[in-house]
Amino acid sequence: MEKIVIFTGNPSSHSVRKGIVEIVNNYPEIQLLIIHYSPRKLVNVLFKNQWINVKKHGWRWISYQANDIYGRILKCIFPEKIQSNHDIGRKFEWGVIKKLANIKVVTCNNLQDDEILEKIRMFQPDLGISLAAPILRPSIFTIPLLGTINLHKGKVPFYRGMPPAFWELWNGEVEVGCTIHKVEQGLDVGDVLIQSTILVSRFSTVNGIKLALDEKGVLLIVQAIDILNRGEAIWKKQQLGGETYRKPTLKQESILQKRLQSPSNDHFIKYLIKELMFFAYCYLFRPIPSAVLAMQNNQRVNVILYHRVNDDFRDSVTVGIEQFDKQIAIIKKSYTVVSIEEIINGNIPRNTFRPLIAVTFDDGYLDNYENAVPILLKHQIPAAFFISTGMMGSQNGFAHDLSKLGKALPNMNWQQIKQMKELGFTIGSHTVTHINCAKEDLKKVREEMFESKKILEEKINLKNVIFAYPFGKKEDMNSEALGVVKQLGYSGCLSAYGGRNERTINPYNVLRMGIDSNFTSLSFKARLEGYTS
Image 1: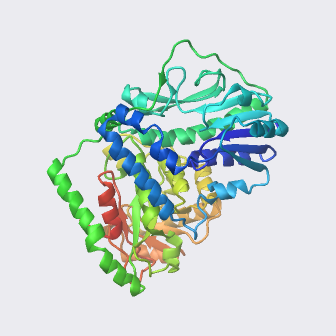
Image 2: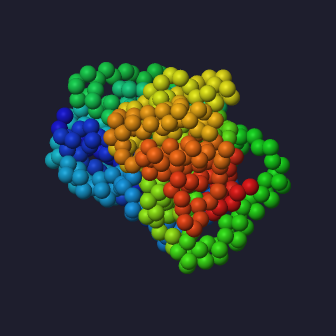
Image 3: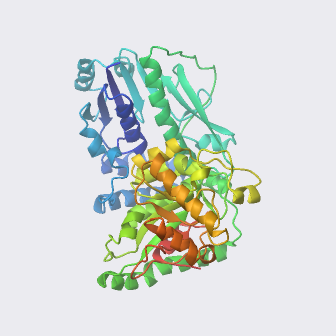
C-alpha cells in the first residue's frame, strides 16, 4: 500500500489528528491525501434549521443555542491559550501535521465537487479512510482501489448512527463497541473488518466513554491498515436488523445525565451555598491578592496531585475520566502550566496574574497511561509521574489497595513508562515498594531510594531524578530520610500534605495538594487558586 486518502469533516478534533499522526508514525512510507470539509460559517450555525430544533427540543434549545453561540464568539475573541514553553502533544497540532513531508491537505466546501473528485482520482489512492467525515457518496468512496473504510464508534448493526456511547448508556448496555467497516451505500451498513468493545464501568459517563473510544479508534485504524496492507482482510457481513440512532433531544440528554450522576451527600441548598462560596473565592476574593503577588514577582506555585483516573471508583484517590478532562481543560484555559523540573530548578515566571500550576501523579497505576496521558496530550499539559519501581510490570498490588479494596489494581509496565518519557512526560521515584520513609528502618529506606533511582537511570536512561515520598504527610518523612534523599543525588523531594508554594521554594520540600472525585469544577478552580479546607 502506497497511498491513502483520508476524508474528514473535523480536523480540529484531537482524535482525528491523533489518528493521522499514528498512521504517519506506523507507515512513514505511505503518502496521505487529506480531504477536509471546511468549517461552517457562524451565520449558518445561527440560522440553519433553528425552527426545526425549537420544535424538537422545546425551550431547552434556546438556552442551549445561546450558550453554544456565546462559546463560539468567545473562542474567536479569546483563542485557546497554547502552552508554548512545552512540547507535550505539539506533534498533534494541525499546523504541524500539515507540514509533514508525506501529507497533502485539500480543503473544500463540497466533497462531491468535480474538482475534488478529479484530485482524488489523480492521487490514485489504494485506500480511503473516513474519520468523522460527512456521509460519502459512491462517486467518492469507490475511487480508492481497496475501497473506503469508516471508523464508527458503535457496535454495528445494533448501534448505527450517532452519537457515540449515548444510546448504549441510555439502554443500560454493559459494553460499547467500536467498528471498522467498509463504506457502502447507506448509513454504517458495510461489511465489518474489525470490531472491539469497551466495558461500561460503574461510574461511566457519555463523555468519559467517548474519550476511551477515541483512543480505541486510533488503535483500530492502524490495525486495519496493517491487515489490509498484508492482504489478510476477512470481511464479515453485518447481521440483519439492528438499529439506527439519531442525535438525542436535550431533554433525553438531561435525563441520562441525572441518571448517571454520582449520588451526593449534600442537600441542594448546601451544595448551592458551597458553589457560591467557591465562585466568590475565585472571582471576587483572589484576583486582587493575585495581582499584588504578580506585581511583586512572587506569584504562588500550586502543585496538584492525582493517583488514579478511572470510572471504576469514586474515592479519595480517584477522579473520573470526564472529570479529569474538564479539570485539565480548566488548567489549560486559565493558568500558566509549569513542569516539576522548572519548579525544582527555580526556572519559573512569578509575575503571572494567576497561580502557576504543575500536575503530578503518584504510584504508577495503569489508568494513568490509558486514561490520563491521552487527555494530557490532547490539552498539551505536561505532568510528572512518580512510580514505585518494584511494582511496575508486576501483578502485586499496593498494600493500601489490598487493604481497602481487597484486590490488586493493574499498574503500568516499563514499555508504557518508556513511551511516556519519550512523549515528554516526567518520570520520578516513589521508592521501590511504596514504603513509609519515616517508619521503616533507615537502612531499608536507603536501599529502596538507591534501588529505585538506579532502576530509573538504567531502564529509561533517566537523569536528575526527583523523589516523591509515599503517603506524603509531614509525619511520613523525617530529617534522616530526607538526608538520604540528598546524599543519593535526588534533585528534589515532593510531599503530599497540601499547601501552596509561596515566596522562595525549597526544592526538597515542594508542597502538593491532592485532587479527588469530590471536586466540582468550581471547587477545583478554587483549589487551584489556593483554597484549602
